[in-house]
Amino acid sequence: MFREMRRKRQALPLEQCEEVLRRGTSGVLALSGDGGYPYAVPISYCYDGSRLYFHCAKEGHKLDAIRREPRASFCVIDQDQVVPEEYTTYFRSVIVFGRVTVLEDDGAKRAAVEKLALKYAPADRAEHRREYIDREWAPLCMLEMTVDHMTGKEAVELVRARKD
Image (cartoon, rainbow, N blue to C red; front, side, top):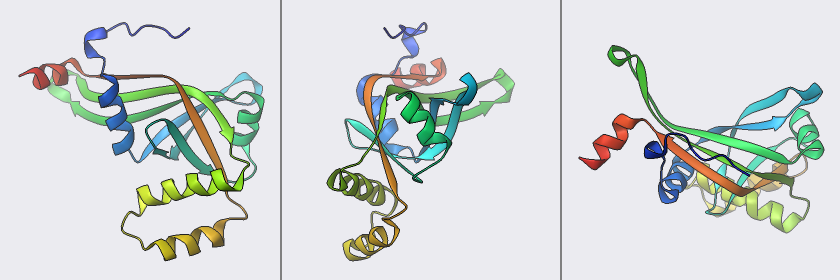
């Protein structure tokens, strides 16, 4: 169902793909948008080792697209170093394919937003985090993306450097 990577020697092992997802702070969620146009939106996220979580408003283009077609892809760029003298970039990125659902259950929604909050404010006090989430709860929508397929790729120069 999913294509094989053409440049296999540049493929990242699953463990490194997951490291990229844990390290990253934003990515691009690609959905099937209005009128058949792709809709790709930059978004913050967290990865818990099996699923990705995003937050959004309770209405808008993103939710309309997800409700119409839950299949999506999500891309995180971990490195993008321009090397002008070689007319290239030394890159590292991961793409996840999966299905996005809106978390309707309050317990699942709370657990997801807690994970997101811990990622972006790990030193915050639990009480402050709880108060903030409670204050923002009403307009908050949480999305969960299951992982059907994941690939990562890096520049051949980085592959060589890792082997040396």
